[in-house]
Length: 406
Image (cartoon, rainbow, N blue to C red; front, side):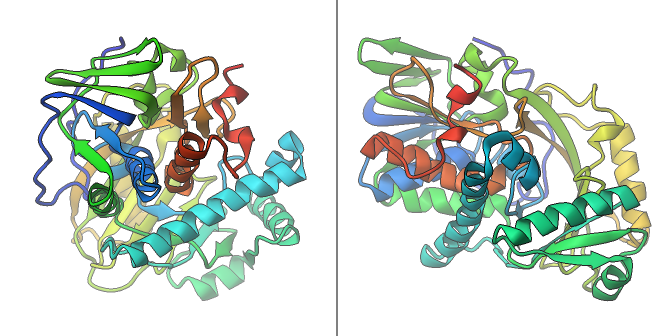
């Protein structure tokens, strides 16, 4: 069993609000499904299983949404880390389209679920802008957008003049691509609201319950925590970057990579109306409904140092983020109120691993999102629930872990 490097140390803006955790698991339970991890993957799986009438037990080592789910920028985007044309070259156009459509459905189902279940998480369809930091990047973005347009995934292409006209005050870029359908949300409030809905159906959720062992006994799995255990026919690993701490299979396949972020005090006026990415995704920012700015990225300044599960600030990157913030036009009197890090799970081909684990009956994985978890994780829960309840799924099997674990 791998050892965690430490408990959570930094506090993101999303996590800095009053919250009373659920009690730890304190007895031995039996359930059809045990879910390990209380981020969006695990809670979404519990939600979809509960909707299907399947009882489940979820254990979270710390607090719900305390990991990467509560440490990103709350970007609910369409698309994958590899560009669409790269997906088509790798897997063929039909598979690329199906995977891209997965992220579209993920976004739309999540937005609809917020409405249907009355989850108050500031889910707003504000659109996303991918800005080019060089002429070469803009040509890549233009080509990618044209491919998407031809495949039925519409984008607007803005040259430098159009971008300056559409985004007042956002200068220094060579152009951009705009998707009006993408949304921003408060990721912690979403996951915790979804957990409450799941509990009202068929889910039982325990926090402060780290997994000490996961063992196969005959036709069932045994999940052991410090003060209780779960016996289950099926187990879902919703641990993303921490999967190897429970199952060593994922060493070298899901690499823990750290990201840095900050949040400011409210600016007092609208500066950025959209979600914004720049420099091939290494910089990203948005303005929240209360006027705060959330800014993250710049990992490329120290890629070799930003690995592992240690939740810690990187002073050089945090200083660079502050300078970037001022370069965006946010004046020095608007102070930084929160600085944090988050651990992402990267896989070699930058595509998520969702589905059954080969030669491990009843074991399922949802992770390896490579910094793009909100684009996949909610629907990943539905996909896993389908596989457990129905034995099959309508979603692309190229996402199955067997892609990397033959």
